[in-house]
Image (cartoon, rainbow, N blue to C red; front, side, top):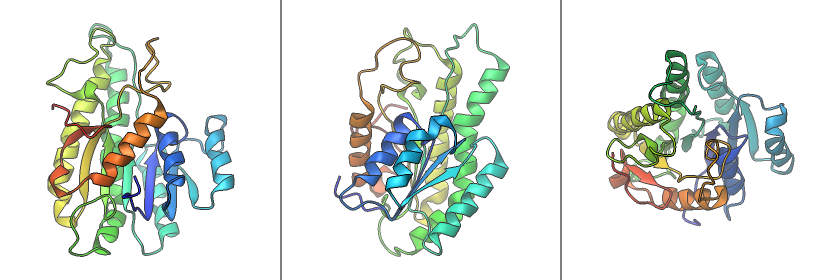
Length: 259
């Protein structure tokens, strides 16, 4: 974990669950980032109370209002982050915000599929487009160095539920729209890795495990992995990512997840 040297990171969906866990552990690193940007829908609302408490104790934590399905909100967030960074650029964009609905194959609807796909797949696409200039700027400050999270990276929070090769959890939760959106996010990650490699930007899809969050427990089952264990594992993985990993789909322990 000490190997993860990141000057700036932005985490979406940062007011609870895995997003909040990531923010906490970035702030707690031996050499924390100069800037931790925590993005969520309603920074002043009750659901962001823990984030507000953290911000009162950490001057390097900046809470950014962001609705990942709204292009205007995304543009405004990128502008605010850019102002804080000056000319430094953004090292790490973690597209963590996501939603799920417990729909089966028979109960899936146009409205739910559209909402979930827009949040889980189109949101990360639009965010990566908006923050690309800042990511490129960070990469340019490390000319010649190999791809890594310390240089510039996009991490898309996926799920093994999006693996076409593995039917994991089908008997517990069909969540068809969620699975489809994450499978599409995996392909987006692959496309980004091909399109952004020339700019020095690493792109990886990460499965955080089945984690004890509101989403992970939504079907009434107890998830086996704590937020802390998942995030610690993912930070370790992030510290070890290199050129060979761009475009891959890994889990929180660094194992390859089948596409």
